[in-house]
Length: 281
Ligand code: GLU
Image (tube, rainbow, N blue to C red; front, side):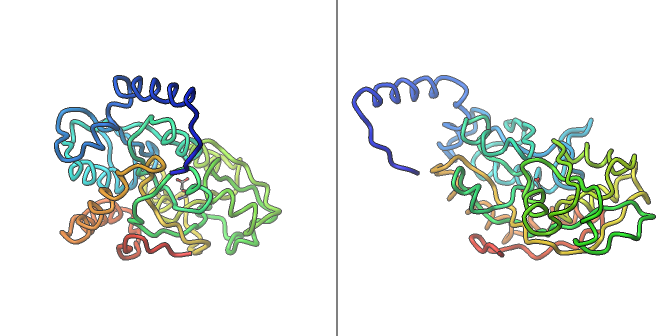
């Protein structure tokens, strides 16, 4: 939490703003902070809606590893499943959604990094993934990151993958940034782009989707370490509570169960559970 000088006038404004928050939409966060006596209000959680295996909105509800992690954490904070309101948090929207108080926490393939930590706080990490490429199954021309330099590559605005391509991996690739992963996937299918880059955990889910079976393959490159954290508003005391919940999720076997249920169908070979605070560079 950054300390700022507070004048009498701005203190009055802050006091008013706090009052407004307390009776308005921020109620969920107030409840969440109240912790175990919760049970009354709602908790609002940001997830992805278009990532099978991680965060997906289906006709039957929400599913995926991030959804299971979010439900476990919410339960530890005193909220039952029907008290969770899931909101879509696209990659580029996550920091703003937390700062504005639109959501209490975000579990959405959200990598911990220095730039984001200037704006929000992270509990975790709770999963280690790696950046990889998804290409069309019949395309053998892309075997390394350098091969991308003459290709059209899709990544999602506001993701670490997009930044990594521009800064390090293939600065000469024709990078197209789309707002969502599903948009990139459509582009890959119809030939508008030659490859889609993001975390292998996400790409495995796309390759295994019924509607896409046999159409795409992963290049199998570990282009980065992506340490998934649970994002909270900067300075929030939820961070410590969520860390405790994540530790319990691993020690009681629920983490492993969630991994098998959600990554098993895609044959994704995940890394073992990371230790809280152990961020792989
Ligand atoms: N984990 C990476 C990130 O946080 C890529 C996946 C995503 O866009 O959510 O940017």
